[in-house]
Image 1 (cartoon, rainbow over the protein chains, first blue to last red):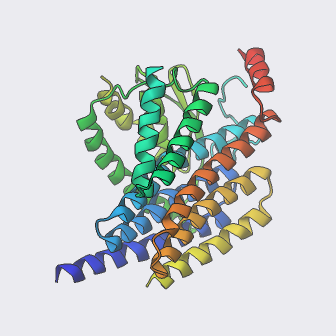
Image 2 (spheres, each protein chain N blue to C red):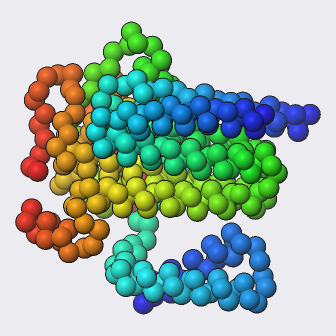
Image 3 (spheres, rainbow over the protein chains, first blue to last red):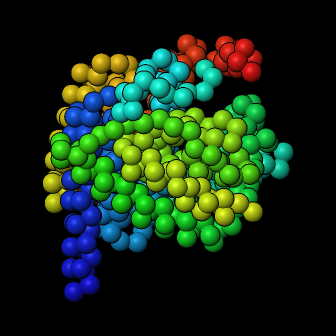
Length: 111
Length: 157
Length: 96
């Protein structure tokens, strides 16, 4: 019984993760400019990948495999914001102007 | 020097954890690679200076992670709706928001938390302000309200 | 069921690849490649579970590390035009 509940939960996590991955992919294609696409990539890195890995953790039970999966989760959680931040900063310094809703006034600091 | 020894011990225990082998030959290979890592870290000058320990309330940190997880789920659902439903508006904005953390680790934790929440990305961190790009007004107002900022500041020792 | 996970991952990879090929600016391409790397990590892990060979997780872990370092290296190259410390230090001096 407990086994089945764990299985169901893990499949729900894996399928949910797959759904958010595809949503992130669609967003990456659909959103209008680079900075908005950054948010779609955020969905892939946080919700999609973590849910799927959580499902794998439930499937694996408690062993060395779990430790490795948790290390991957931790690593993605720490590196994905760093990479996103580095990308945004590099794009802004590289002269890419974000498309803004409020019009042209972006109070950007010294460059 | 002390930091280098700690780094070596930490790397070697990580190696043991990941490999699970205890033969003499493989252990010596692990020791060799640990020494290489420590040597490179010292040569890059990161072993001794950047070895700041975590000046934070460790128990509150877990509470904060739980709260952050909930925020991430909520933000994800919101951004997902915005991607799938073309009628919902996307109105990006860029603004500066105040940062109240004293320590460098706290600031980085705050900026990373902003970026980890979909809908908002921290672009730059200068002085006492962080530059944020938000997907829409609600996400931007979430950062402007300063709730996350206060929670991260409460983590600082 | 792991096959379903792999299917979702591959569909997403195709969408991302389209963005990497279309991407009007170099930043779009780098962003797409970064996400593609995350998905590769997932694909390797899922494949390991499908084949019941947990050793694949080690490869996934290493791939996650390499992906991050690679993206940072590419970004550093595009921002400073150099991977060494020299030019960057000079640039910081000019700004500061």
